[in-house]
Image (tube, rainbow, N blue to C red):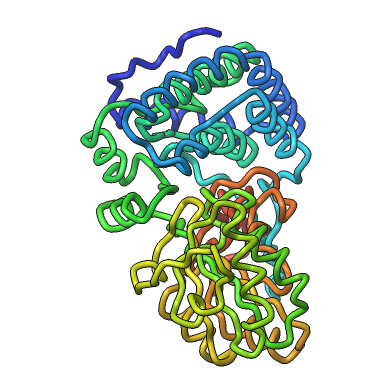
Length: 425
């Protein structure tokens, strides 16, 4: 694995200039070219497993010594199986349709002009993210497939892992005769991040991915256009007409399948009409899986003997725990559940469990979120699960992109107008 040719002290204008040159090359590649490159990158990542895992061990050691939370350590971890999954994500992207050149709409005007709106790459995309080294490879792969050059700024907690991954990707691109500057790693402290956020005209788009503090900093301080990826205070609402067996499986999976990620459920809402039957079993299963529970007075009363439920606060209801903790509330009806979500939700993913089609229709119509689930786990809000391949993030904003963002969301459009000498009368 060769070392990166870009010095760690390179400024954002230097990185952006190299990225712009690389993006022009990428924009001309055919789908076959890009797919072959992605498959080669996947092989390179697999071949570098030992080096990547060793670098990750350095990051994990620093994290443990610094008191990093268990959930964040899980996000940071790359073992051999996860490296293989990261490589497979590149292969999955290679198998997806190429959005570049897709005709979004078009027509022939009365004067004979033929107009069409086609997808084209953004150009240079910056990404600022925290301790998720798999994002490094996902972003590079999606950027390549969509014809964009990527400037990546990962969190310092994953510095060694990100460096090993980017060196691997750049070496593979160079071996293929492709511009290695299609993938670059921005290093340095807060000043470097600030420089990236204010590189308007040099960077076409910025995508933050991480906790609320990081995202809000990027959104409020950037002069570069930003797609806002949001935090995930996701809810599961168990309706009066729920199949309680389904509800139990969905609740436990939504919370415990991978509790550190943004589509894990943080709050459980239960209709009062089924609380007596549902909550004792649900609380026991959640506690048995190691979940720390914060509940209202009714939840505390219904907890089985030996199951501790801590008194809940508004801060608990608003929290994205990033781990095995959950808030619980008993609500009077679907209207009360909707009001709770309106107050505490973050617009990410909200699930209802019900056999009542009217309740389900009301939930999908009134919940203001990027993804709304009916009788399904919140964990399905994911680009891979939606069939998009690796995702660049999950957007909770309402402009351009919303929900899992994959290839189409990394493109913009241009209008192509073809005539035969027409002039404006």
